[in-house]
Structures are given as C-alpha cells and as structure tokens.
Amino acid sequence: MESAKSLIALVDDDVTSLALGKNIMSGTYDVVTIPSGEKLFRFLDKALPDLILLDVEMPEMNGHEVLARLKAQGQTAGIPVIFLTSMNDVSSEIKGLNLGAIDYISKPFSPPLLLKRLELHIQIVTQQRELINYNSNLQEMVKARTKTILDMQNSVLKIVANMVESRDEITGGHVERTRAYLGILLDGLSEQGLYASEIAAWDRDFFLQSSQLHDVGKIRIPDSILMKPDKLTAEEFEQMKKHTLYGVQIIEAIQKDTPESDFLSHAKILAGYHHEKWNGQGYPYGLAGPDIPLGGRLMAIADVYDALISTRPYKAPLSHGEAAEIIIDGKGAQFDPDLIDVFITVSGRFDDMVRKLRGKSA
Image (cartoon, rainbow, N blue to C red; front, side):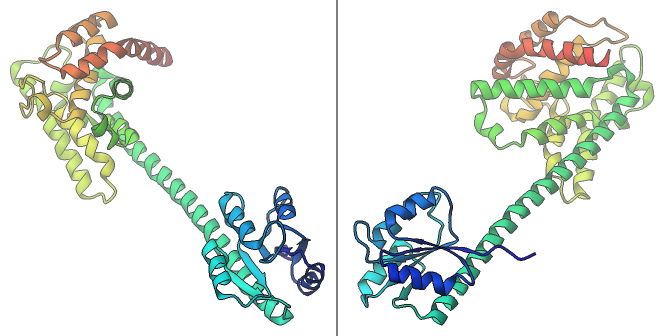
C-alpha cells in the first residue's frame, strides 16, 4: 500500500508562479495553490498542510505578516514554512528566519533545487512526527508497565495481608476496613488543608496499599497468643506488642532484596508506629507528639476505631457513636489533636463505610 503524499500549500499572488510551482511539485506531492494570505487562513480552517511555501512580497498581507499570524495560532504554529522570494535582501531573510521560517527558496524556481529542498524538509517533518508518535507510544508503554508493577505490588501486599488475617480469625476484615478508614481520613485532611505539604509528597495509592501490611509482624506471634479467645496476660501482651518491631524487620528484609521497594516505605511506618500515642505512652518506641510519623498517627485512629466496633471474645462490638466518642475522648492523649478534629468532621463516613463493607460481606 502506497503511503499518502505530503500536502504542500503554495501561497503566492503571482498566477505564473502558482502554475509553475504546482507543475513542478504535483508529481511528488499533493499541491494546493492559494493566491493570498487571507485565502490561506480560510483553507487552514478545513485542512492543515504538511508544509507551506509562502511568497514574501504579496499585497494586503505580506509573507512576514502571514507567518507571524501562523505562529500565533496554536493549530498552525507547528506547520513548517519556507519563504519564496525574488529579492536578494539579507535583512528580509533574517527577519523571516527570526519569525520562524525554516528556509528560503529563490524565484524563479529551479525545479531540481525546489524538489530537493522540499524532500529534505518533508523528511525532517516526517521524522519529527515519527519521534512524537514514538514518544507518545513510549509514554503509554511506561504507563502500562507502571500499572502492571503497581498491580503486582498490590497483589503481593494482599497475599501477605491475607496470610496474616488467616491466622487471626478474630480480626477478619480488619485490613480492608482500616484501609478504607485511612482513605476517609486522607480525604478529610485534604478538605481542611491540614498537613498539606507532607501529604502532597505521598503517593496516595502506595500509602493505602501499604496499610495492608500494618499488622504483618503478627506472622511471628505464637498461635497461643494470637488466637487466644480471652484477654491476654501482661506477659502475653508484652509478646504481642512486639508485632510492631517484627513488622518493621520483615518489611526491611523485603526492601533489602527488592530493587523496586519504594512502595514499602509507608508500610514500614504504618507497621512500626501505629501503636504509638500522642502523650508518649504507646509502644514500641514511646514517641510523643509530632515525633510520631504522620502515617503512624493516622493508622492509630483507624486501627483503634476498628477494634472498638468489632466483636471480640472478651467484648461486644460498640456502636459507631460509642466508638467515635472514645476516639474523640483520646484527643491529645492517645491521638493527634488535629487529626481528631478531622475525624470529627468525617466520622459519619466511617459509619457509612462500615455499613457498606458489612453489607458486601453479608
């Protein structure tokens, strides 16, 4: 199949030049002859040529004026323009080149020279378009590849998180719910412009996906403790508290052997700091206030809320209102005061999300 001919617009007020130029070029290119600048712009409303041959000396609107108008319009700014001139005026040529012309061709035409110059410039135009198409296709390939990597990472996170939950039947569905709560809190932060600069540096998808690993350290907690149907003893609770440190260790081990592990940076924070308290009485590090990473402070609210509304062998589930009241009472003690203010504004969405997720699993 033959490729389509390039379209050349020949603009000149001289009828002889139009006829001669079309006769020279028509065997190689599709040529449209146009007698004035105004008629050129009418034509451009219907079609865009691959290249414009433009006479400099024309009445009403000269070539320089036409070129300036072409370059000022987004749709036509990229069309290459070659000036046609019978003048031997260096200053005029420089002016045209400064306006954006790519070349000058003298009149009367030399057929071999005209065709050779056109061949060269059409080849450049073709290569530029091929490069643009290649870059566009490359960007699409990168997007597709990035999506594949994200899907793979998310799949790995889900598998590991499900392994943890499969051992801890008491907290079934906890990972999915806490991830949803975090999304609500992030929305609330954005709406209020709170911690905006810090959150702007996060990849939201990475952050929410990584939350699935916040309890990954429970893999190393003995079944006798993890699945105990009663309250833990003080000694057992000390052992359970180590799941935060175990989680950090597991994630660091994965990062060490995984070149593309940026998505785990949030996971390590969420695993290690979601039991810290604003007043410094949490674990495992005993950090206080803003020394606790923001991700850990957010995860703490989501984690505690879900524990309060969930059934445990040693307690009945609390209503949303009861759980929200306890969370709010922890303002400035267990939880970041600013985050609790956000929680108050979005707590109804927590309740809606719980109903939605429970309805889906029913």
